[in-house]
Image (cartoon, rainbow, N blue to C red; front, side, top):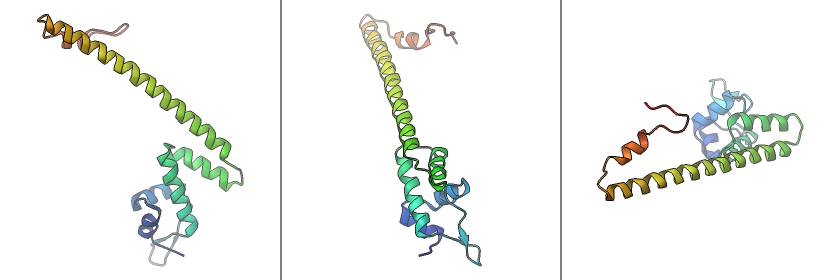
Length: 140
C-alpha cells in the first residue's frame, strides 16, 4: 500500500510536518516520489513513523532515535543501546526531581521567612530574600 505524506501522517498519528522533518533528518529513508513529485510512503515507513512517535513519548531525542534505527538497519540488535538511553533518561529525571525538591525547599523556607517577618510588620522581606546574594553569587 502506498500513501501520500498526509495519509501516512494520519495513519501514524503524527503531523505531516513531523514526517517531512524526520525524513530530512534521516530517520526515514528518502521517500519515493510520483511523477508529479509527491512523496509516497509504504507500510514499512508507517512502522518507522510509529516507532519514532513512541520513542519520542518515552523522551528520546531524534538523534538518539536515529542512532537506534541506524543500528537496526545495519543488522544489529539495538536493545542494549535502547536500555542505556532509557537508563540515562531515568537518571536525568531523577536529578531533575532532586533539583526541584531542593528548589521547593528553598521556596518554602523563603515563604516561611516572609510570613514570619510580615507578622512582625516587615512587608519588604520577600524582595530582600530574592535580592540577597547567594553564596558565591553577586548582587545585581
